[in-house]
Image (cartoon, rainbow over all chains, first blue to last red; front, side, top):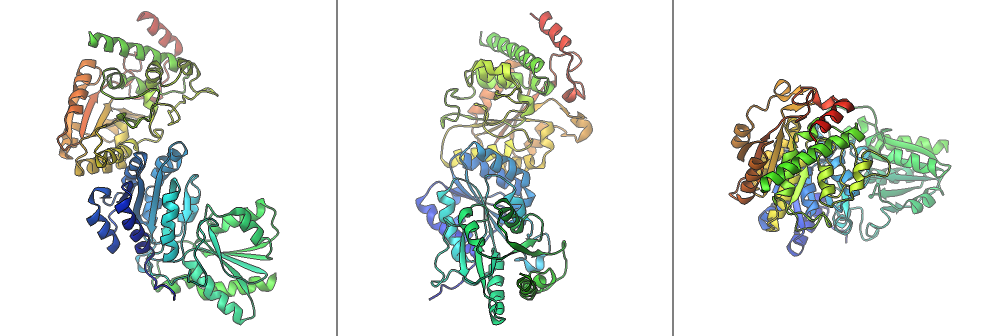
Amino acid sequence: MTEKPIAMRDALLTRIWRAMSSDENIYFTCADFGSPVLDKIRVDFPDRFVNVGIAEQNLINVSAGLALEGFKVFAYAIAPFITMRCFEQLRVSLALLSEVRPMNINLIGVGAGYSYVVSGPTHQCYEDITLMRALPNFRVLSPADHITASAMFDLCTANVGPKYLRLDAQVLPVIYSQDIGAPNLETGFKILRTGSKVCIISTGYMSHTAMKVADRLAESGIQVTIIDLFDITGFDQAQMQALISTYKGLVTIEEGFRGRGGVDALFFELAARNDIDIKHLNIGVEGGYRFELGSRSELHEQVGIGEKAVFDEVKNFVACL
Amino acid sequence: MKTNFLRDKAHWVWRETLAVHLRAPETRIASSLSPIEIFVALYYDDVLRFDAINPLSPERDRCIISKGHGSICMYPILADLGFFPKDELEKVCMAGGILGGIPDPVIPGYETVNGSLGHGLGVSAGMALGLKTRRADQQVFVVCGDGELHEGACWEAIMFAAQHGLDNLNLIIDNNHIAMLGYTDDIVSHGCFSERLGSFGWSTYEVDGHNISDVCATLHSMKATRDGKPKVMIANTLKGHGVPGLENQPLSHIINPKPEVIDNLLESLM
């Protein structure tokens, strides 16, 4: 039986809350951002929970100080603010300092992509993968369901260094059901479905879109492989290279700007560096910031990453291979 | 007399700092001359607990030097105390050396990244919170410039420290009144630091930052005070202290005194 889906943050925060009773080295910081599970943390562990207020720069510097004192820190805020409001703090106090000091610090950013549907571009987040993967020493993690988000707790506590977890704000269906199996943290990606000719690599919410598109393509007689990439900077490069080398076409799908250094750039570079002869279609948010209102799927269609838009693009791409 | 020893030590550091600058003109000299008595007091008058052999020993008091560029005077001090070999002072800004134009945390004795201003206070607040959580008695000292306090992140940390009663946090402001392009009062004035920080919930102490005995007495008194409030010492100093043509000049940050001026000065004071 497949587990009932819950919010990614509740899954991860529950793991943290449970661990805090036995591990006195876990500290939780946040920038005035909550969740029902967070209430349990602040009630049960008041001396290892701090809300710095709406002050992300201080959130990062205070968290850095705590990490220097040996705490495993989880810092929690809305995704665009924990990545962009305090970018220099991330660069100086985490990426740079962790070059010479062991610092276990884990940023939990909630609101990947368009997950804050009606809040508009300030609260939506289409630049974070590009920016965070630009910082050496940072590990960028992008789960597609709550099971992956929960599993990442183990990765966070087992590995020193700064990490950024981009979580969706909405409750997404379960991908890692018993049939699929657990997300393998050592590899950093998982083959969700196997086809031929074309391999689709997607992350976060877009792995759900990719699965739906694959169903529609199958109805048209096109079988595609789907890879859910959840460890964007730490995935097993050799395995990934070997895998994509067997296809004629590669499609990357991300809920971030197209052609601005996100997952697409990662794979353009991977193929170019390793001389992999593969055609690459990069699907991402087309154009700039938008102010239209609508459902997430309506917004996605407007910017070229909706189910229909992706289906059309991939179908044309396959026809040209 | 301890005071004479400290005064002589400060003078020695002042001379050595000028000598370093002669060899490495890329270093910021004026802002490195204003905090000399502060650092001499911290390191030579038993204010700080430190371990030169094991600089990151958990037993140490943490000293965060947030005004990185303006702390070249720490190079002779750390060498003198045995944090690294003295011959490093001959290799400042040179390939193979560890002492750069702006200090990095690869230098034993430097805790954090200081090149970019305005980060030290927030990181210090986090360390102080961590120490308090562990009920450790080590304290955190952080030296900031007054110009650096234009950064908004500093004020986030100032509010945070008061909110959490971080009485193990000691901020020292090297209040030399000059940023890169002139007097801070002409750029964005801080008004009266004592009033301003007092109103933010800090215990404030104000001293002549070049009076070594006052600086020492104040730092000891701050360290001994644990009354639920973070503490700040406003040390009123002169940028370019002791160097004619440099001292208190609004553009002293970017003026490099001519080598012969420094030579003559050092000679006349022999």
